[in-house]
Length: 302
Image 1 (cartoon, rainbow, N blue to C red):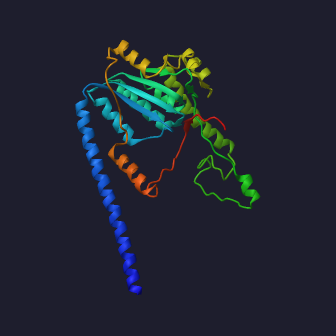
Image 2: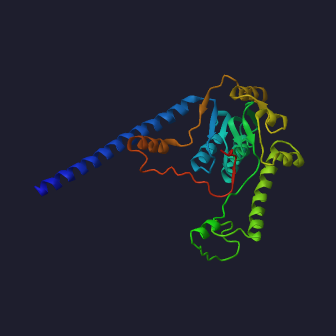
Image 3: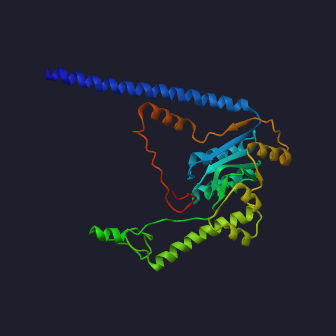
């Protein structure tokens, strides 16, 4: 009787495994068909505008960078519309996007269209375009960078824990929540922050044709509405994609009736992961958001 029970359990396990792999095989086949169809569809598109969407927290993304590199070399793309709705993110993420857009701009016009948010690293991204359009109510600006930490030594004293840190030099791991920030550590960290800030200010100065003094007055971390940004020279026009297309027509003689297609950053692999998540839940794939390093991010206090 005991053996019969073990046999039934083993059969059920085998059945579950077979079901899993059958579903996975079907999904993989579906992805292959979708990918093949996408290639055929791309070849059939002809000349068009590409729409790039940048949303959420900006970080480095190899798939996105590869897609943008291919976009620059795609002769069927007449121009690029970059829709941005983001509070910012890592400085490196914004810097990477900025340089990718500048490379595209060497071959075809790029217009940034700011949505609800286009602040910090998102505004840095927009600077990579040739023309920036925003809504009246768009929140933009927040030119600056930050590095946040905490001193929890008081709390550790309260609970009777004394951290011990062995390090190669006095500035290693500064700032560190487990020890007070020394004057030398604060000076070193501030120096790095201000160097990155100088880079950001220089981008605004160059791309917006503003003198450095004017940029520094605007770069105190404050945000601006679309109307304020226009008055201060941070953007070029108010409106949305329609106004962006008018500029493309007037400046580059690109037909306003030209079709627009969205650029897929993620491809078949991400689509497979999404489908697998929908079938099996999110057990197998981590979606932990990491923001390591210096950030350029605007977030109102709640």
